[in-house]
Image 1: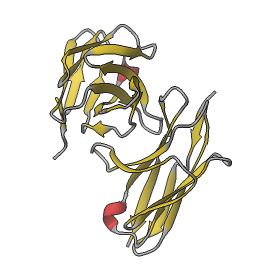
Image 2: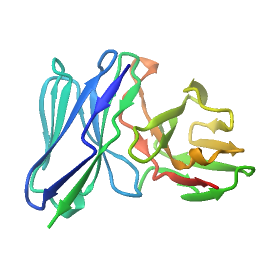
Image 3: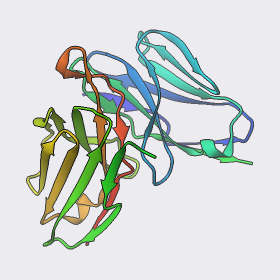
Image 4: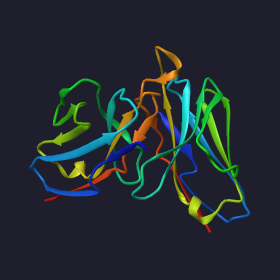
Length: 109
Length: 119
């Protein structure tokens, strides 16, 4: 079966750096996505990786290793507003999105 | 402001009620989706519409009935639901990929969801 694994919850301190990991086993691969979802709000697109390596976008970076079935989302200079759930999703060979259960990130002052 | 609007935001209904959820997008997208989001579970894809045609129905019980009258509007009709159907129902839209209806670019634009409670 297809599966996406990510930690259920993480806690970090304001101003610090946090890395949220995502591992996947899917039937084929056509890209990996990260979405952010604040409580009670819509998920919003953060990043898309289809080739190996690091994609940087401001304070957020996303890394992909297709051979390892692994990605991470790196958040730098954490702010209180970064408290949210972070969803990892992989597009499989049929272009279907397979979702992880999300990682709830708690930022403490 | 999101480009995808869902109403109502909250809905409480009994198991014998009939209600509908509405989704509207003005992003010019041709693909629209219904997802179910339950606590600590992955998003569950329920239905997909491409150019108003339903292309996927992921083994969803018949008590959920989708309707897509045009590419900007999507409904989810609810009838004789069960308490386990209580969840957040998310609507999303996306542009279609260059390969046509079978490929979606992947970036989804979500509404804020309709929180459904079935008593």
